[in-house]
Image (cartoon, rainbow, N blue to C red):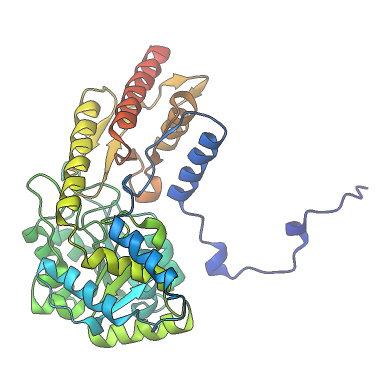
Length: 415
């Protein structure tokens, strides 16, 4: 009989709650960590998994944080955030035609926490949340933690990864409580125009649904696309919408963890109460950094960054269009992602491994070409990989060359 001592986790008497046991780690975070681990080992990996722009944090934000430290602004703040930041945030959101007051804004530790609070505030056990697919990986788990169920509505083939109002309406049941929208879309980069968005929102109005509108990438729209804020569509839309945003993407402040939710006053008050018992408030220093970003004259710098990222987007689209076996789906004119259908490589073999899924494709691409992308199964896009084109231009060009060479080798080895 073995006398080996079991690993501590094998004998732990702690029983995990079902809601915790059923939530897996973020797939994007796991792949990002795997790529960074290889980089730390000296492998020349080009990481196209990241959900953050490869620009430095804007200087006024960094300086404001240093000033906060220097003046010992390091204590608790009001639960909803410091008043001047709530006011600046309302002004920032309202550039899209909304009419939020500072008292309707709650500052949170990132947009993801704002989403968590939104679900916690709106969703009862058994409630359903409608969402157009493909969708961001964390949405179903945030919904599940609140006791709800995400109900994806799949786009029709050839519809450019967009769903219609009729498709949404057909998915409504007597348990539907929330319509969740993310525009521009992570992972597809697709942007719904004002007319398309208004049609989707009308479904929520007709069926008395609350709307959670994740607009974290509102700055990053390209070409002829324009951002439309759901709450600006009509008074009826405004009365039922929670607008989610943050400084992470626009100002390159992902690690500062400042987001927000803007909502009708009773909803904002409920979220404030929840935050007072959980996080207390976001970091005081990060709040000052966000205030520095929101109140500085950064329009020229932000426009320069937007043009640079658009150049990288166009470079990526041109390169991928020339590669057989991979096809960009939809029209990615927003955020900094796109979805590439890699089902054309299925059945091909390289290094004794056969590609039968997008996950296989991503694993082989990482090990054989040192390029990291995210397989799309957790985005409800199982034949796709998500590519983030935020890396510097020289590294992006090298990554695209590696992808082309990898697929060529994949085809030769299977020929």
